[in-house]
Image (cartoon, rainbow over all chains, first blue to last red; front, side):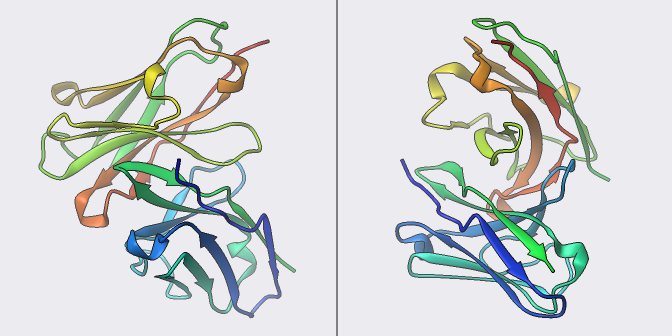
Length: 106
Length: 121
């Protein structure tokens, strides 16, 4: 079965740029999306189709996808961005989530 | 305004069948290129994609759980139902229903609040 690999944790200082990676075999040949989940809340879609932001998502969130790696980048990270982030893609017409990355803003 | 809400039992005994209902508003599951899905999350663990049903009644299931899952829809009642057979303590999780569309490559853009289902050991 298809697997997506994310680093368990990423730390960033306020105002700096955070990058969270998601790796999978030929992931660049598929669409990737990203979700943010804060404690006790449902996930929120922050990036879809590799690079697009849903309405209401701040411009500091951006995405890319090439080769075997998709990347979520948060520019000018704020304390409110501290959360778990999950990548997701499709393989053989079924969805697959990555294991999640805990972003700490300190 | 799209809203979704999951309902069902909070406690299920091992070997029993879990039936969860998602009641939604603000869109029609009869509309082309609309879908509804289910995702679960064990306590403290990652999200797990379970199933998706399309407006045309096409269905997709997680390969690892396919034999135990059934997803159905009643567009007239604005409901989607997920059944999971032969429940086990490892199925303890918060179960979410979510809205999806082809225009966003079937990502989930609206989610329910989730419902915690516990299977005691």
